[in-house]
Length: 258
Ligand SMILES: [Zn+2]
Image (cartoon, rainbow, N blue to C red; front, side, top):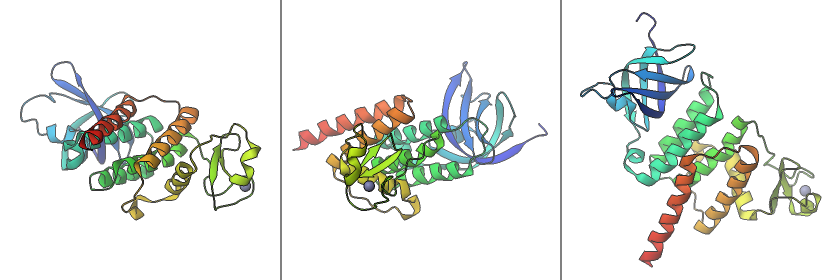
């Protein structure tokens, strides 16, 4: 055990391995994502247990290997994102963010910017800020990690920055209303949804305060981002399906209250 390394990290997921052990995927700040083998993770009073819970950041200490499994020996400065851990809706959104971050980069790729971005998103979700909006911002800005960089700031054809916009995959960006005719296969998205996606592409979580978006507009934003992800990313995560289902439960709950 001479080569112990320590790094801050965020738990991405964990799964049981045989009866007593666990495999835990951690996004480490200093060495990217890695799979750790944790021996005796199910042993009572294992000091590592609180550091392995979903939605936890800690300093993880272990043998970080260049290939194969790494090994976790200890953890300190354990910080749980408590509200997310305790709320089924928030943990639905939170799991989706973790899965997206996991899908967006390869293992062992040092990416402190994505680490910071994920940490900010989870920290905000752990407060009162709207989880759906935090998720949408995450999705729009993460497109870059999937190799997609749409032009959001202005019409691709004339540079217009004001007015109604639609999205065109032919031009890999937004078109102002005067240029909608340039692409008959433009998305025909709700202009309010495109407006918010443009805003989300440039906003920083530091500056994000309460954003008030009507639920009808949120539905349109969801459809628009789904179309972008379907076209450019093409991954189908269980956690995404889960949040879509949650939205319909929410709908049922609100209807009953009326
Ligand atoms: Zn234009």
